Each structure stands twice: as C-alpha cells, then as structure tokens.
Figure (cartoon, rainbow, N blue to C red):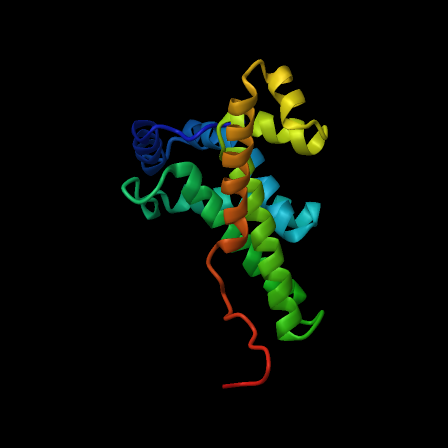
Length: 186
C-alpha cells in the first residue's frame, strides 16, 4: 500500500508529467493504480467500469498535470478525489434509467460513504489498521489484539478507538442532497 507522498515528491511528479515524461506516468500508475481501481470498484461494483475509470483518471492526470495544486492537497488525495468524482458520475449516468432520482441518489450516497470508508482505512497508519483488522476481521477483543500487536491493553484500546473515530467520518462526508424531512414539508 502506498502511503501519503511527501509534498516534494508530489511537486516533482507534477513537473515530470508537465514535461511529458512517460516514465513519470508509469511511476504514478504503479504507485496509485490499486487505490484508483479499488475506489472505483467500491462505487461502481463493476470490474469493467472500474477499469474504465482507472484509465480515465490516469488519462486526465497525463493530459492535465497543471490541474493539480500541491498547495491544496497531496497527489494521492487529488487522485482519489478525481476517481471518486468520475466513478460517481459514471454511476449516475448508468443508474439514471434504473430507478427514481431519489433511489439513484441514495445509491450514490451509499457508494460515496463506502468509497470514503475504504480510502480512510487504506490511508490510516498501519498500527491503527492492524488493530482494526484484529478486532473486526479476526474478531479478537482488545486484550487479544494487544497480545498479538505486542502493546499494552490501553494502547490497543487507544488504537481501536482512534481507528473507529476516523472510520466514522466516512458517513459524515459532503452531502449532495439535503436530508429528507419527516412529518411533511415546513
């Protein structure tokens, strides 16, 4: 898994892309293709569509290296944002005849939350990810997780709590539609 790239690397990569260095695109693809494909697949639940979004994202980056601003975000975050937008746009286009606008929007919101959760988990520090893996995938309690991780029980609880706090933000991302009103319009 790739970690957040340092800003110097991000700026240098942008410069290399702007100069049309094909090797830079290959390096960028090697570093972030898995992230792009995974996020796209999370939103679209379709391998072929995720492949297409992956090609589109890297094509856009190649053709528009100046669209990235290192002062605004890391290159990884920018690419993840591009991926999410393209995947959601594709989902909206393909789902528009598959239901009412409200149903389509609910699918988009659910897919967006899932993609954010996936991105959060892949971006969090390895110790937090390891604690969550032990607790939720292997179903160990914090005492067992502490023993497996070789840390104190307090440290295991702290890692789990922080990991869950980070993960909970996935459902509080930007909304594209206001929440439904209950009890009639006001």
